[in-house]
Image (tube, rainbow, N blue to C red; front, side):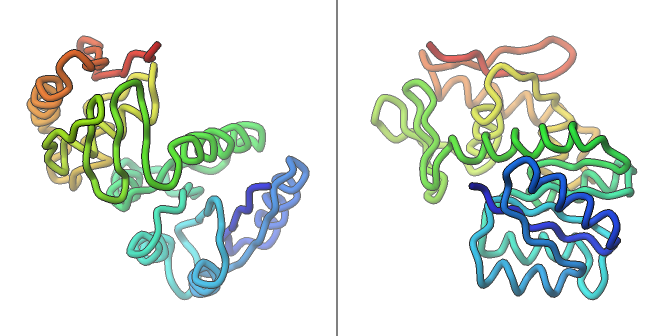
Length: 221
């Protein structure tokens, strides 16, 4: 059973989230502020953090930043702050999803399940896709058992693609997740990295260009 930590200062909404997720067979711990959340993350193992931004004592951004110093635990930001800059800032901190309130509980449930499924299938150390293996701790790539030299940024782009096979990832999405938002409009840098990645993948190149949009990874056999 997956264990979810909810960090939400609104009591009514916190109880609603907890009741709904527990009815979907998740184990849930709920707290009202960032300091409590950080204490619990140090003491317990959670499978996912559902994190509001405007919370007392330590805000959601700083909570996320501190968690990311030691852990890759999946984080979904659930907040009423819906501006593009707020979302980009969240993805810069390597969150797994950003959901704006109000959101239907059924949509939230599907997004939680999707993040848990995506993060659990890649395993704690390696992500395997066809003949490609990513060492998530060592940040190395092997093809047919042989290590291939990838830059850190190439590794991160390939990881994003491998985590969502068959789904289109736009250039702007990749920029917002992997670069500071100051470079948000310069999407050509993604094309350059994709070109280099394709050369290194060789015959194992599953990357498909979606013209005018971005890229997606073909599903391997």
